[in-house]
Image (cartoon, rainbow, N blue to C red; front, side, top):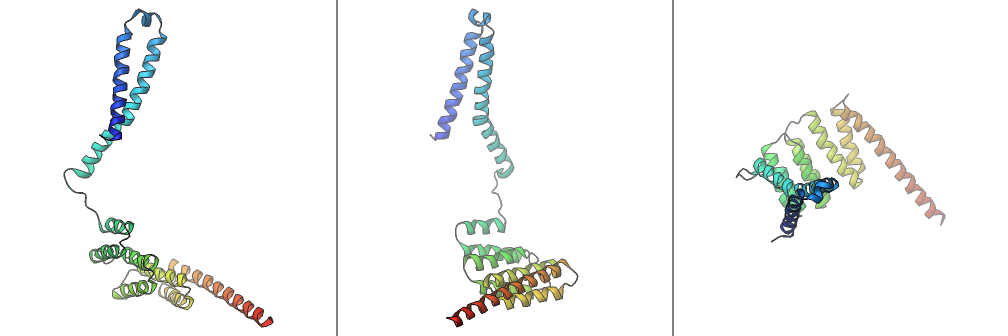
Length: 217
């Protein structure tokens, strides 16, 4: 017998004893003469009853509703994303990639699983080059919508930024700015180019300062 069951039985027993006690005392002269006793009894019964309802009855109602909604004698179907997340949680990154690839086969126009696979390669398997190759391959494999193409290209840019491969990142950013003129994607790319150039300038300054310091020594 589980601890939860024992607690439920104790609460149910306490509630039953409270009811029986109040019933046995309700008609006694002592209780009839002093109205405080029935009032206290009702309040106590309400408290015990509330605890009983919240801890025993309500969870059972919830379980019943959940069973009716999600079970009904049938296994709940998991989509590819749920399966992939489960694989990720267990540390099976290759298995997660397999599940995401199944999603790609089912929904080839959805860039989400492609992006997620690139994240696994980069963040979990420490294979950013494979992530770039994977993204580039899918980007060139078909005609994407403007938003989805920009989404995948910015994913490549994120990886290059993480690697500090500034020239590669700048090349993709210029492609975004040129391919989608007058769009928010182009504006974001221009902003990112400015950010990148500032990073490069600061790195160049730091490098020159270091060389000057070494030359002075």
